[in-house]
Image 1 (cartoon, rainbow, N blue to C red):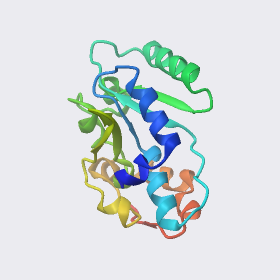
Image 2: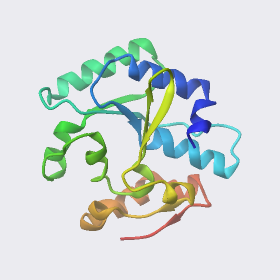
Image 3: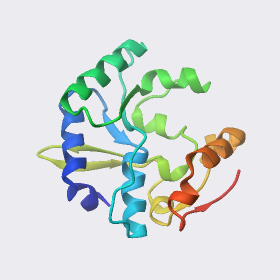
Length: 178
């Protein structure tokens, strides 16, 4: 899976732009990874367009949305064609009604479906690191399964399944309904 991303010049440029921000515990996740894997497994020649590129970071001392907008603006200046969405995971527990998260990977545990709970970042001299609190089996087997948070918030999980159109976009995926 990481080899797919490493072989994609656009994805690597996006990862380099994100790393260049110097944000703490910074990852690109969700659809950025999921779409690449599912496109490959479906044999698509063209990459599925992304509604956004989720940049995740963890900075407890700066939880205002203004900081996120500034990061998005800086990234937009660097790569204007990328639909950036920066979210400080140190504040997202407030939106979701959870206990405070301890880091970005911990925050991902509270997302609603397992194949979305994946993120990647550049480390060292251009190597890729993967964060996947629920593993990657569901992603690789194209199974959309609720996380424990998805089971607790079953209505939100079902709404995401219906609104995201994943089953139509990638017809070999299978959903487990909460």
